[in-house]
Amino acid sequence: MNIGEASSATGVSAKMIRYYESIGLIRAPLRTGSNYRVYGEDEVHVLRFVKRARTLGFSVDETSTLLGLWQDKSRASGEVKDVATAHIAALETKIAELQGMVKTLTHLAHCCGGDNRPDCPILDDLAGEGPAKQGH
Amino acid sequence: MNIGEASSATGVSAKMIRYYESIGLIRAPLRTGSNYRVYGEDEVHVLRFVKRARTLGFSVDETSTLLGLWQDKSRASGEVKDVATAHIAALETKIAELQGMVKTLTHLAHCCGGDNRPDCPILDDLAGEGPAKQGH
DNA sequence: CTTGACCTTCCCACCATGGGAACCTCTATA
DNA sequence: TATAGAGGTTCCCATGGTGGGAAGGTCAAG
View 1 (cartoon, chains in turn purple, yellow, brown, blue):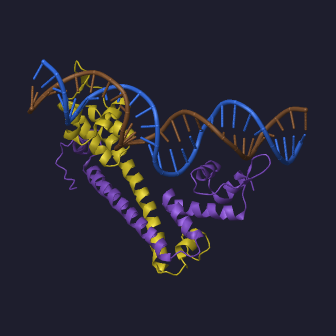
View 2: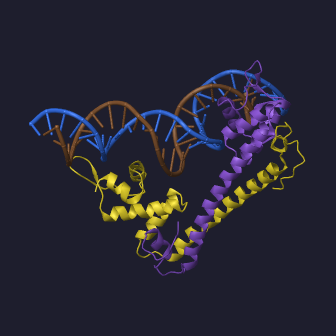
């Protein structure tokens, strides 16, 4: 299987497959006589694992850890749960942060007429002149 | 006012102030005879505006737009509201995405014993072997 | 045999930020 | 007044993932 075929079989671009190989996330595959990378089912399986982990927001580093645990038959599932739990916490922190932004902006947009008058509470707030309380 | 004083007056690092100048987000200030940047109240005001916009998650590009609108006395507040509204929508999309990840991971972590047995539904799911439905 | 699709490596760009080197300038103190 | 140290200047490099593209080799179909 070519890198292009492996790419469409996994949804990981050829560019990224080479990149993952270059940083050591995945192992270098065999090559044909003409230096083409050759992938088999195992490699595709690994790539799908990586794809899924990345889609779930794990960093490449975390993905690497998970991949190691996946391939370690003797791993304790507690280790995996720890990685997942830490990741959930990080996601929730990020979500709370974004929600705070949305809250502030929604409040401001609500106060902003949005018409053609030049008075704008959003800009006033950004400029630190407005009476709007941000509370954080 | 030195760049360092401007930095502590606004919370924008000296490094970033120079960067914002280099990309044209803010204007180049006057210099002393010894080539030090000199900032006044106006510049500090602009930097605070930028800081606040960045804190609210606006990209530098969006910040630039808002800054232009702020400095344009004849702008319509509707334009500002549009930028803010689009930004809120983008934030909410991002939030929904992250919440989807949390949901999936929470479900998996809940199913994962987290003990010392090697069976792990999280890894099974990442590998695409598990019965867990992701539904997105 | 040519054409076009695909592979290879290598470099560059993004966005926003930080680190650090090498060098210059100001201020306070011995 | 000499010197130390704090802070300014420019310039380059790194991050994390990803894409774009050039230059050149390879394969398959017409």
